[in-house]
Length: 146
Image (cartoon, rainbow, N blue to C red; front, side, top):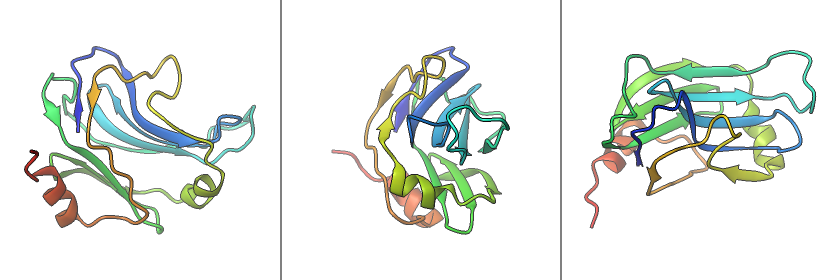
C-alpha cells in the first residue's frame, strides 16, 4: 500500500537490479500513473535504450489517499498492474529480465536515483516468487488490516 501527495513526476515505489549497470526492474508512480519498467542492459555505459514498460493511464495516485498497488509478472512476459485490486494496465514484455535480475540482484531499494525518489509512505510490502492471480491480488487489496 502506498500513500503520496507529492507533485514529483517520477517516484520509484520499489526497484531492484545491479547497481553497477542499467539492469533493473522498477515499480513506480510516473505522472500519477502506475508503471512497471524493465531494462536488461548489463553494460554500465549503455549504447542503446533497452527499457520497456507497462503503464496505466488517467490515474492520480498522488492524491493523498492510501492505495493498494501491485504488479504481477509471469515468466512468459505477461504483466498486469493493479490499483486497489483492479487491473489498470496489461501488456507483454518480451525480455525475460527476471531470470537475469533474480540471480544478480544486488539491491532492493526505494528510489532508483535522486530524480525518482518516492515521497510518501509505504506499508505491507510483499514480494512473491510467482505471478499472483487477479483473485489473489483483489483479496490482498481488500483484506482487513488490524
